[in-house]
Amino acid sequence: MFRKATLIMAAISGVFSVAASAEDTTLPTLQKIKASGIINVGHRESSIPFSYLDDKQKPIGYSMDLCNKIIENVKKDLNMPSLKVNLVPVTSATRIPLMTNGTVDLECGSTTNSMERQKQVAFGVATYVAPVRMLVKAGTKLDSLDDLNGKAVVTTTGTTSDQLIRKNEKGMNIDVKNVYAKDHAESFLMVETGRADAFVMDEILLAGFIANAKNPKDFAIVGPTLRAEPYGIMLRKDDPAFKKVVDDTLKGLMKSGEINKIYQKWFLSPIPPKNINLSLPMSQELKNAFTNPSDKGV
Image 1 (tube, rainbow, N blue to C red):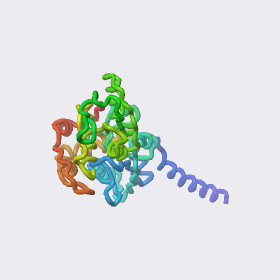
Image 2 (image 1 turned 120 degrees about the vertical axis):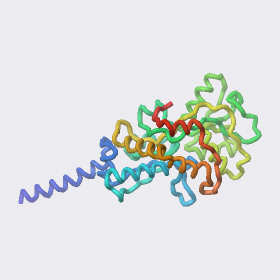
Image 3 (image 1 turned 45 degrees about the vertical axis):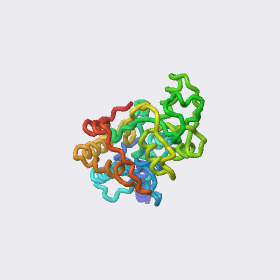
């Protein structure tokens, strides 16, 4: 009787051990996914055309397509064709904490690979290169950073654009009123409604909001390039096995040319929900990034 009870308790203990391991953030990502049967994918809700919600509230976009390719290879490597994909919305402010605490395994959005962020997380090879500029209402006399003196400038909380404007503000002795929004959609809305004079962000994201605005001609992207920023798919640090799956997938797409087709789909073709074409040809910087893949941060 005692032996039977011992065996039962051991079996129960084993069940709880497996369950615990599925949530163990100290496990390498592939082991965590294998134990839980789930891959948790962080996505944005308004980062057009990288990761955003369509009219059915489904996350779609360029980064989502690339992450889906990675997920396909994870399924193959783990021999888990029925692996569950759990979609987790993230913002600029929450994406790194949710990655480091194990809530998400991949972040598929529009995140700049910076040396500062690499202290906390890792990135796959660059999938996009974006110049940082500013969005204003058309017709306003805001063409340079000097013109921002005394103006309200909105940036999305947790973005590198915020850091750039702060550095330039100090360097050029201009007095900018910094205001912050929870996500890119709110930042754009603040300019649209007159609560901010300019929105400093990556040019492609600004172009996406203009293209989907009620009256696109009401807005303009102006000013110098503050910095060209490489975007990367984010993952946890010190996880070489999972990073290899991410990088091998992306490099394979680049080498085969398939990534060019994915780019064509999101940047040079009509996209949901309004079937607007962003008409943004691939830059030479991005072509170079595809020819010589790198996860170097700025």
